[in-house]
Image (cartoon, rainbow, N blue to C red):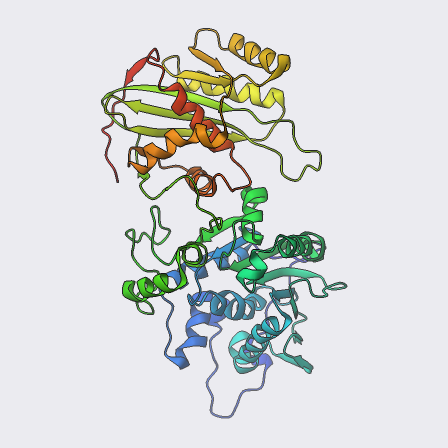
Length: 486
């Protein structure tokens, strides 16, 4: 763990020893284990109630320790209701944080001031009860539930989302459940208010090197977590733990296994799923919110492979969807996507690779040429011919730069929905696989949201790739690893 320093570069002073506080007669000195490990602190705090951290709680603890140590400064924790995420991240973690950062300031926000103060009261009570173990105590003249200070100079402030935090500064901001209900989540006006509060009020209150922990259950594809993932994905470390495990589970659960079987087993969750309905289940319990209306793609049959397939003759194409001119507001420009799709002689399709970038014409050209070099000349390249003479010039220019490769240039015909339908049909039939990679989640999310989602660049590239693979003149090649679902 890195050494923490103040803004002027000097190290924080050492945490006071237990000897700094009065010891009751006959009581042995308590060893400061909580100053070393969040796990030990959590165990000390919860043991009187007979609780011990479950597997997903231990994973939460590891992620929170990374925030405290400075290895990351943006952490998003996405878990279902009833998983005790707030117990660990909003109650136990701030208490332990002060043992590592004794002079720091915390701003804790929730969807209402009442909930924020409820958490603040529990944090404060833990500090009061365990002062000797922690090495600090409350300052006696300021013990309100949502606003208090500690003896080492740190302070804690609780507020509702969109509540007043002007004049406050934070080394750590904790946002727990910024959305209260589906009515709020489904309101575009409310979602925009929360977004503006986050970027205009909260972020501007952070001190240099300040950190943010966002703890939430997903409600809507454009809720605060969804918007941050869409616009700032590379800045965030994300832990997503659905109620029932899916492929690539962070806890290494088998698909369909419950998150906390000691608390809610498979039968309990099935009963709850039948009650709340599929939309609520997908959003709040699986952390994969879906539009209110049905989507075109059923992504459940998609197989994720640990390796590229198969020793069968196959045809392969890299299809490109080129971004339009970036939006003037600069907030959410389009993506350029290059999707590499293989079709074998049994008509099974595998997405082998996906390139997704935001950039100007030179960056896009460089990405296309670099991908062509890596793919080799047996992989065809499909490029769009956008309407107008400028679109034809761009396509012709790129085709010229790719001399020696098989290049397919074609205009888009029909609606996006119509172009995507053949790919959706093959996915529904269980004939589509992905090679396991970092891009899988964003790709599947976009398929799930189409045609109601905010982006469709990956869908367009997939549609183009499927269209290109109906061209029987594409070259065949032989892969060296068998097609095996894992």
